[in-house]
Image (cartoon, rainbow, N blue to C red; front, side, top):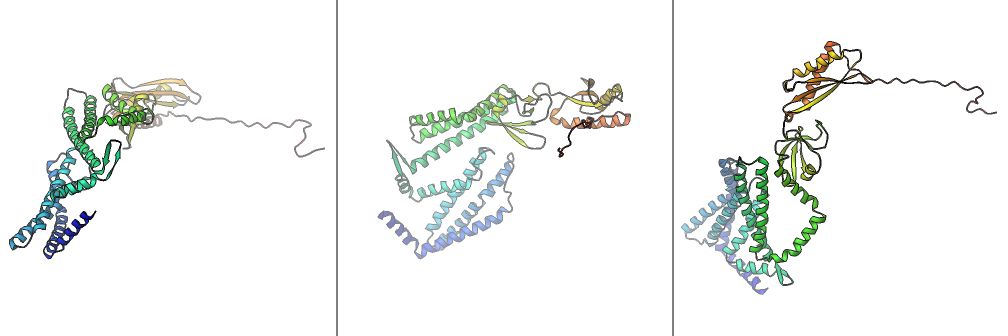
Length: 442
């Protein structure tokens, strides 16, 4: 422990000289001035660009790299000025190198995050990852890399014949992360190519893309572990534990992933389909919505209220689902109507057909029909049946329009809709002769 303390003391003593203190002051002023200038410059640059707009991405790169670029520019100007004046500038020169390295790392990390797509989980972590990489590379640039590696490698524990240290864990994480990033790039490139193949069905394209992504990521993890020096045979215990976990606690998650691939392959549900997933029969609109996206674990269904419901894939496999656009998008709707016995049912049925014929979304082949279903207790039960070709545009709005038209036509033609009535009769029982009134005794 004596040598590191002496080395630190020597470094502190060298930095305390007047020439070095003046250079440190120049570096501090340059950093503050660069950050202030970058803050003013950022107000003139949009902070984000469209995903498909290259100019927007260039503006965003400029917005992200503005602080580092301005600090580097001012440091370089200060370094040139000190050299022109003939004053010592070793620390400023080192600061210029470190600033350029930081700018390069920040831009590379940003480009890597953008290239992995909008769904990448790296957004918001770019600055932290950049500074971690910069710290490690800066120590190598200053010649302190071997000492830092030795220090991190000395902190650890022995697990049988294997030694686990802080350095080995860091190397493992970095190596696996790099391989996973490469796999994500390859998967995204293949996804773009597969989604452009018009010869394949949309569900098949999505299934191939997702399977390829899962396969490449899994393979990259194994290759990264092997490249980091980890013996894969030591993972036998881990894979056994994962198998037990799948058998007991993770079976639902595994079932959802398998069900997702089944949905993609059999094309029973695809993006854009109109479904009802509550098991209601016929044209009931409970759980009515549009399939927006098929994910690995769930399906995104958006209803007419704008609410997105995440339905587990297993539910769509094991329960009944009404797919309104599976084979024929046309659906038949039924409107029950009750009329009074005092009215003319033939006239009421003609009025029902008239109410349906004037709606623009009701098709005429097959034509609307009116049926007398049965004679009920409170009135004659009629039913109007008609077809619409576009259930994705809404069902209840058509029912509402036709019901309003029926009400107007019935009121204009004197057809009444009876209200269920119940007659209650109260009979008073006469007292029996010789009965004793309550509260009185002999």
